[in-house]
Length: 89
Image 1 (cartoon, rainbow, N blue to C red):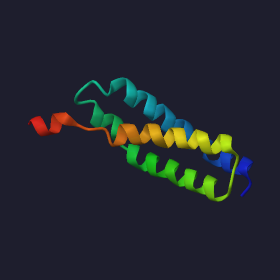
Image 2: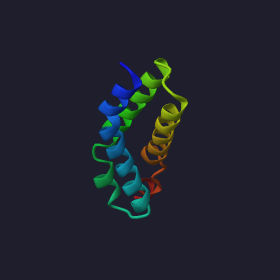
Image 3: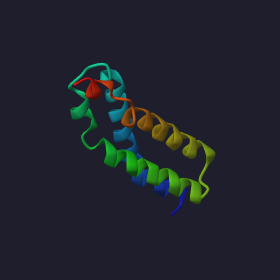
């Protein structure tokens, strides 16, 4: 698959994941809302990680790889964020 086809196929998913990240970053300080935000987040995160692995393997442009790395990094920060409130209960 050429890079252009790859980008066209997965661009809507990447955009949806980026939107989820932005929403999660805004509401990380609120308790109780995190579960609603994280519903489906893991599946989107895995899909973007998969796309990143494919892009690296196929040696797509550094711009695309950096874009996907940024999404994966931001998603990782949200998904694996320390949840101190759980241990206080």
